[in-house]
Image: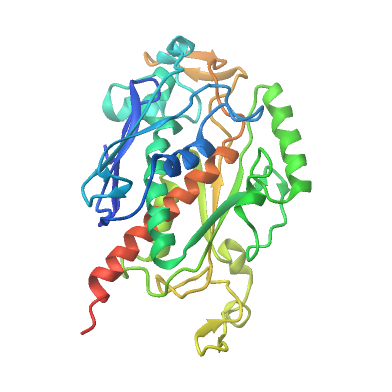
Length: 363
């Protein structure tokens, strides 16, 4: 199973949803970076379950333990191991799902590939695996901010057909965290919360779009041809659970424009820097960051595990029905926001180190 991500700044996640715990090993982190368990914990708190009436009621504190790689508040340059222990697993809720496949979940495909799976809570296919990503992303965020002042802000852009109006230039973390759906548009947020709560009571689920804006991105990040920055971002985002689509800049809407309408024309700012008048490229051209804001969007499907009765089959090949039990998010979007930020941070941190390794020498 491919559980390692990155080239120079790498993470390796481990653990299952109802096992002893989950976590991550971060390798390639530069030494002397100031990092604390509290900084990592603040990111994990945004991801953890039981936050509100529109998330899963599973109660996990998700307290992180830094096992290695940090001494006296600074990274050593050695592998950083972070562990979060599972406390509130209820494996009996999944007894029926041990033999009945959940529609659109990973149950059937895991069996097809491995011939065995941990059916308790979804095992490795559970979004609980993303704890390791968010913990590693917290370290990546710290490096990016310390070295280049990079700022990464994600938020819920749409839930079903409710869309938010967000100023990408000025949106703040405080605005995103001001409500339980993590949408900085307060009017749209209220509508989203009401709709998710309604769907929750109906034992159904919803999907939507998370948008992410990255400011103060250094120019030159990205490794053409195969490791273009947007290609690695796409892989990172699409590796998250429940993702079904990735866009950057104008995305699919850009196909409706002509070249003259779509091109980002250049100009020189007051400091003599080359800038673009528009940003339909989403901050990346030719696979390399151009210094403008990186703007991406991630589409998340409705949560697969729902309480409504649906047709399915058993592991033994018998047709049956399943109304899933357990505790699940009626909409993954609010908790997906820090996951998206983490994956973006991991990609950018890795490419920052790769860029310095290849092009940082003054020859």
